[in-house]
Each structure stands twice: as C-alpha cells, then as structure tokens.
Image (cartoon, rainbow, N blue to C red; front, top):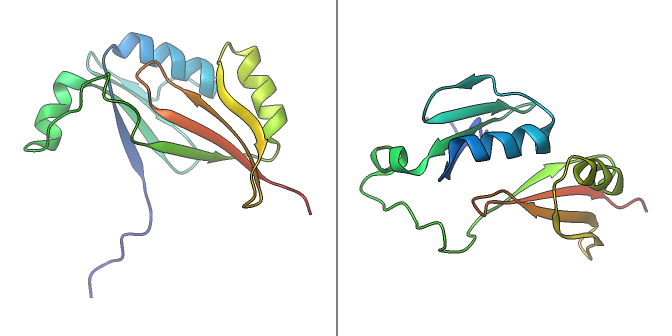
Length: 131
C-alpha cells in the first residue's frame, strides 16, 4: 500500500528577485535563511521549509508546466496558524509588512489577516475565535 500524501514538508515560491524576497521574508518571519545560494534562500518554519527560488531556475523544476508571469495574479494563499491574530498583525506592522486586509472575524470561526510578498504570494495569519 503506498504511503499517503498527508504531510507538506516544503513549499517553493518562484520569485523575480532573490535578494528582495529574502529581505522581505527575513522581516516578515523574523528569521534568517537556513540555506542560500545565488538562486534561492530557504527559511525553516516549525514543520515546513519555504524555498524562495528565482523564477528562471523554476522552469527546469516544473517542466513541462510553464512558470506564470509575475503579473498573472495570485493563485495561492498560504495560512499560518497563530494564537492571536491582532498581536501578530501588530508585529508584522512593526516589521514594515503592509496588510492587504484584516484582522477580520470570519463566519467559519477564524480571525484572519492577509499580506502579500513582493512577488504577489498571499499569506494569511489566522487564529480561532474564542467562543
């Protein structure tokens, strides 16, 4: 029986400017890369690796699928669970990260806020609303 696909270990985000993306994520995450070279910078979250890869290198990684143009619009949102959405938003603001929206109480029981990286990848922070 094949192993189930139930644990994401890494995500790779295609970026136009590695240094710009690295600086953004260093500010947003409050952490330094665990690995970097001329084409990528890698950040480790609790159970996930976030790899920022220069778009021109992504072609070989996903061929024959095309790499979308930077102005194609967002097609992904990644959510980070937090204990307190408002406190996290205050910290992001302190770090110079501009929110797209929020904090907002959602009818599905979460308080959320979203921000975008310089390449248009959308990140959401979310906490359960206390009953």
